[in-house]
Image (cartoon, rainbow, N blue to C red; front, top):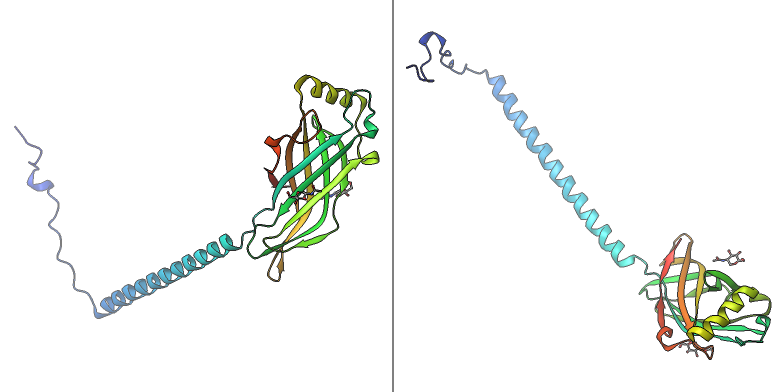
Length: 224
Ligand SMILES: *[C@@H]1O[C@H](CO)[C@@H](O)[C@H](O)[C@H]1NC(C)=O
Ligand SMILES: *[C@@H]1O[C@H](CO)[C@@H](O)[C@H](O)[C@H]1NC(C)=O
């Protein structure tokens, strides 16, 4: 009938010895130790708060200075001469887009810009657009032009497909891309170059003019 607690006397651990008396040096050391712990804790806390403040300031600056990408809209797009019996070399594509700098305090340098038309992912024409220019904040620039003659290269097969789309679906779907090299200007500082792409989906009706569903639509913009 031996319970767990019944340990034979001889096996009991020795009673704790009285804490020994410490020398004054020991106490001085202890005070020093606790003082240095407190000092290093204080330094750590100060450093951490400082870092936190710096991080918050950086974040706020970054949020307020972060450039917004340009906003590109397609307003007009049409193809003329898309008729059976007509040659594609007589065809012309008219386009009218705008690019807006929606930033409050950031200017944009456009160093060069190309417009390209695609049909079924085939490039059917490209040309350089506008001269290099600087766009002030909150300004909109019209980007318009014509692709035709040497700048419009449609193969016989694609031309036939376009005529087929027009006849069968009463609509022809294109894509118009704007590619530009841009730099942001924030006060005295200029960013590095970014290659900007805007992809505008457009569809024309039987008369060759953009359908209302595609007019004034915003084009997705990305950088590469
Ligand atoms: C292009 O679109 C803009 C904005 O809608 C318009 O003000 C301008 O007159 C258009 N230009 C042409 C040539 O259609
Ligand atoms: C525009 O096209 C020209 C000639 O093909 C090319 O040298 C230039 O890099 C292009 N620009 C952009 C921004 O893609």
